[in-house]
Length: 324
Image (cartoon, rainbow, N blue to C red; front, side):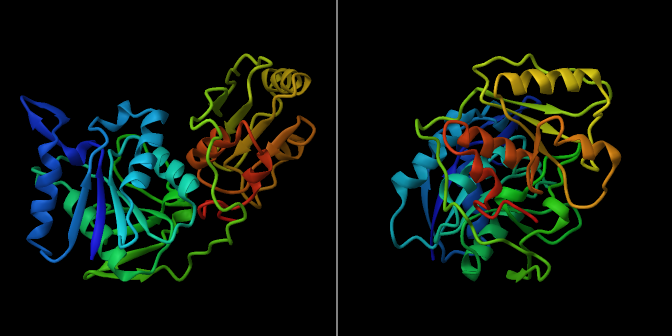
């Protein structure tokens, strides 16, 4: 078994010194030393493009991880593990899902809720689960391995991971349907998990960078909207939990009219089938484009990757992202 391990920092690659958690490149080897006590047979090929806290990760770093994977890839790899911080895990997970697609060699992102030296840390559990999943040879594409407190380690399709709840380190998939879980070192597929065939293979921004001309808005009562300009590529609005917006708001109406006049598309994420509230019937009149059910973070990243090419691919499954 041969696994490329890409270390990028984050809590799983940090240590606590003088009350401050900071990146510590030595923790990369600590993780492998800890795992070697469980399994001394797996060969790990190490790469470390950078070591930063994940809240400081920007889109250039995501591209850097992708480039690092390609530069260190060899045909005899059984899998790839990327260690990452939890704060922006979902963003990098979505980016790699789209950039790599349903690749033959599984790629698994792992993180930790506490530094490895802290007995509360799930870092080793997450890493072990990633290795066990790779050994099972039951998945292609990009995944996230994570252990919520009191639960078995879960394997999530990386393009379906939701944002964290405030003050929580728990990780969930859309509709609470992970790809599967690890039990006693064995991967068990979730028999309720459904995935459409990918319709676009993979996507990657033509210039190698994600556009900064896409903005995201989260619905709040009587919320304000961004100023629309002609150079804006697109706007993404995350609806309330039932897929609704305040369509009676003069602010939203004025925003949609101006966006329409400037040919700036406005997309909605967070809308699923059913819950046919009156407010939803006005979406089409306002020119709002409803995206398929998917992780809002994934839709944001996908939109930024497609902003200079083909918006039609937003409606095609890429990297297993669409839930319905």
